Image (tube, rainbow, N blue to C red):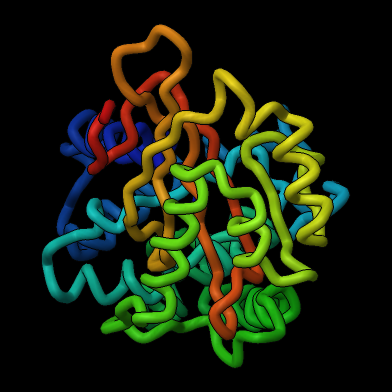
Length: 292
């Protein structure tokens, strides 16, 4: 619903608080699960109404495919351990899917998640959202059309296999990407990129470039690989079910390496076709060491 790890954590707590404060209203007419999902959905809808008043909706952005200022990566290490819940999370955690969902109006988004992600019957989804079955059916049909239009052409379906593991090629590209940083090897880094690579650095809008040359020129112009920004270490990881490199930088005089960015890679035929970078914050990345 929110495409943001921190916001999702906050709204989970808000859901529990609302449930506790409204516990007397639970009469058993619906299952506890349906009652909690109704509370969670309303909490998210309230939050989205406030956020949309501050941030343009995706359709108003120059490039809605990538420029979502609130988009955050989701560490695979934080996926649920419960097998049933893990299947749901792994099928719908890819960045392409998360971004596509953001193009749905909030209430339509809620209907789509309940119906097509969680697999709820229309009657149960309608009960949870306080809608009619007819309106749920109409909303999910419209949502499916939008999702098909927004997902990359390479995807035949929005679902990805729950058992997806990184291929040897993907692991090799991540290792080479990290090695190039640690050796300050710009030529080696460039060789990993497709000529038509798509690069975006979030949460900063306006950083999308679509050629390898532009991407590398941007990194150099930004001071990377130059004194003070040339001492790198990296860790291979996975984010949103995609190969990723967590990059740590040691600046002059610093004792250790601090988080700098997470590069989420989409690898096609051994080359990086899409690179989405998430800048570091003052807080440690979930599941990764705060320093090296």
